[in-house]
Image (cartoon, rainbow, N blue to C red):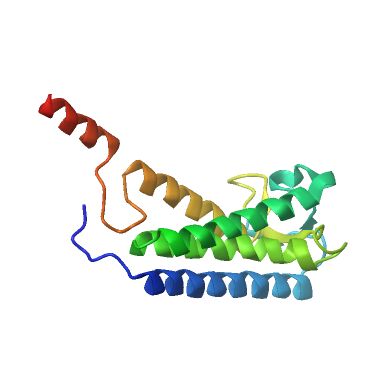
Length: 184
């Protein structure tokens, strides 16, 4: 699938770390700006009805599901971050996987930072959400959420198209099955 030489461990890890820090910083800076310049639950049109700023604190997951078990989301985010780091160190040698996992890790760390350090307290903090696109969905989200969703869609596509974590390339399942049928 590719004739590129796989990344060395240090290059893959560095790529992921740099991207994660950049996304985390962008997310926390955007949340800082939202908290310092927006009024609570007051829509501010940015692009009319297409894009609005609407500041809320979310104790739950998407659509505020699970408000009473915020600590579960904290644990889940921490586990996801640890798994990404483990996969990075042990398996990632693909440039595209390094980029996608770096962006995903940054998004996860952005929301984990809120859960750990925002009110009402450690590990049960509320996530700052302020981006609203009412025409698309009735959700209010943040920069970290955007990176998480986009990264997960890309991970699904990479998996579907058989792009290997190790950077060597891999045939999609259909091609492997067709090759196996020809050998019989």
